[in-house]
Image (cartoon, rainbow, N blue to C red):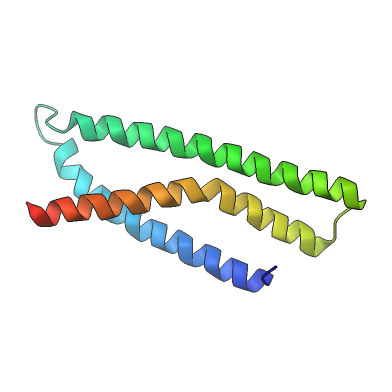
Length: 117
């Protein structure tokens, strides 16, 4: 089990990278989404579907992580504050991982597409 400070640092770094990836994705998608005639409706549909899928997957992952902690706690007869803190990181990581993966993949895909145009 890694230290809480290491986990907090890693979590912050991943979320900061997601912010950068989101900015790249927004910058790449905006011109096509505001173009007259809805020329990029396929990208808009994909965008919404990816958001719904990431939210669903994150909610399920967070629920499973929290349930695993509660079950293990019940078997041990309780949890220490450190175990609870690690469990909360497990829940947060499970909740955000699908969105981080999706936004990172979109940033890579859309930035490659912009360079080839």
